[in-house]
Image 1 (cartoon, rainbow over the protein chains, first blue to last red):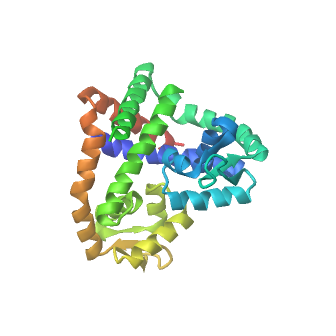
Image 2: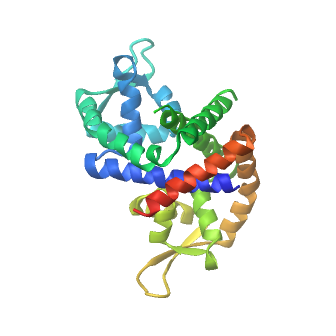
Amino acid sequence: MRAWRGYMDGNQRLMEILNRELQDAHDLSLADYRILVMLSESPDGALRMSDLADGVLSSRSRLTHQIRRMEAQDVVVRDTCPEDGRGVLARITAEGRRRLAAAAPLHVRGVRKNLVDLLSEHELEVLADVFEKVDKAIGER
Amino acid sequence: MRAWRGYMDGNQRLMEILNRELQDAHDLSLADYRILVMLSESPDGALRMSDLADGVLSSRSRLTHQIRRMEAQDVVVRDTCPEDGRGVLARITAEGRRRLAAAAPLHVRGVRKNLVDLLSEHELEVLADVFEKVDKAIGER
């Protein structure tokens, strides 16, 4: 359990500092940031709410609250899905892309300073392998 | 950035599945569970709210909401700190200890199945080392 405890504590601390940095300087939470990244990398800058909920650590109802707060900040809009007229899409706005671009350098620096620069090449490789395995194993269930 | 992306995705998925398992079977979120563990391991089963906020990925105001929900479930109580009469303590109840003990085997199995059993001895060691480094580096700032 040493690995698990160490991971839970280190991970919490890392997420906390990355969240605080974004919040203080750019008024975005780490969760907001992740959503903006996912949307910005999707065709037309939009994803169905159900696909977005799968992509971030969130229940559908929690995501709905979050997207509503982000709508109030003008960084996303909700839309009816054109294909089936039923699903709801979240779409990044021009303002959302601007905010994401403004926040990205700080976030990337934070990831470097608090994770990447602390580790050897080998540790980074193991880290990538470990979480690819986890992602794959859970995805297959 | 491969390590970072892989880690963010795998970590999200892992936390999501552990959260869902606890929620479905024991009506506790992973955040609730972590708080109960921290309290159960403290002297008298109690911690100041400010120390608890440092220990979990949470702002003070978010933690207050969460502790309020946990109070409604009778797993914690809030108390005035006896030492200075100002700080607020959260304390695990007998019911909280019972719920934690009931949930722990499932959670430990989940951690094994979705992380520990997927990895080699070496990968587990690297994982522990990596997050100890992260925790220590961030703690020193």
